[in-house]
Picture 1 (cartoon, rainbow, N blue to C red):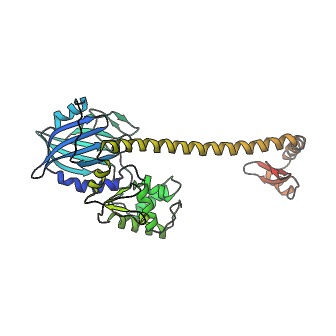
Picture 2 (cartoon, rainbow, N blue to C red):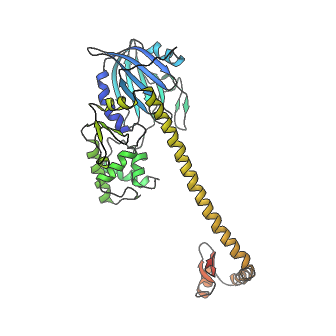
Picture 3 (cartoon, rainbow, N blue to C red):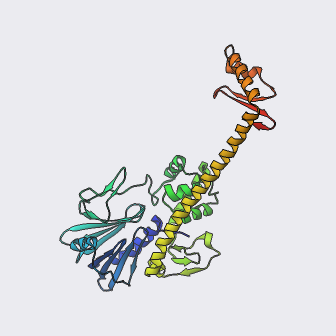
Amino acid sequence: MKKELSSLDLKFLVREFLILKNAKINKVYHYRNELLLDLHIPGKGKVFLKVVLSNLIFITKHKKEYGNPSNFGMFLRKYLNNSRLRKIRQLESERIIEFEFEKEKKYYLIIELFSKGNIVLCRSDYKIIGSLSVQKWSQREIKKGNIYDYPKRPYNLFKIKEKELKELIEKSKMDSIVKTLAVDLGLGGVYSEEVCLLAKLDKNKKELDDKEIKKLYLNIKKFLENKPEPGIYENGDIVPFKLTQFKNLKFEKHDSFNKAIESKYGSLENIAKTRHDLKLDKIKRIQDEQEKTIKHLESMAEENTMKGEFIYHNYQLIDSLIKDLKNILKKNSWKDIKEKLKGHKIIKNIDEKEKKITIETNCNNI
């Protein structure tokens, strides 16, 4: 079950958000990680655009009471109240949506829906006026006075070429093709599984030949061109179109992708549940990694214990062998020793490059 909006999800949402074009902001509400824009669409009436960091954004007709406005809420009201929404766009294939507002001047309200999420207000030259939180990475910093620069993947999911896909796969440090698509290309877990299924490729393979890459590329392009058929599967996944991997699950169709999201997360209870689920998922991932590390360390400890016991019980034999080898090495090279000791009862292998000797007795070896 996917817990966050992918870049592909945002692509479909932004198309539906175009109904907000030329809407007027009546008021801005903010509380903790929630932002609500009270909008009036000419000829259609009032709607609300709701943002729940770091994973949700949707249009709704429902509004809760936010109480006294926060400092950040008052800051946004100063610049955006009574402004008109002129343009909406997704920044390349990133999980970032940019809203262009016009008042006496032009402003950009940028919603980042990745990591911890953020809300950034910029002037027309992208100079940051303020943000919900100050964030710093090695390559960028979200801070008042800085020029806003969003993180860009090496390849744009929506415009990627076959040659670029091949480069991405070859350079990826992921241990499987499904993870390369999900993380490096930004397709997301569920959709990466779907593309591998459609291309009839083993999702756990790390490397692909040219024929497999071409097959994968064609299926990605075809997948991205799917016609909208939004709905919710019984496992909880909200999708902009049907998926082959869920063909045996019940599917609840909706008029729009936004309405599907609103139907599930429109209530405060469901939004809180989503945040809780995300925290549980993160804890579970950490726990799984820790358990794998523990098993690996236990295995190493057991192996080292066996080696220690072997050395202890065969100390005199090993000590004598080491002394003999040292004397032989004074007059012979490793290569000569390897040749002379072929078929030795105890010495099973000599690696002249690493200068290592493997000995074996009673089916135990070191």
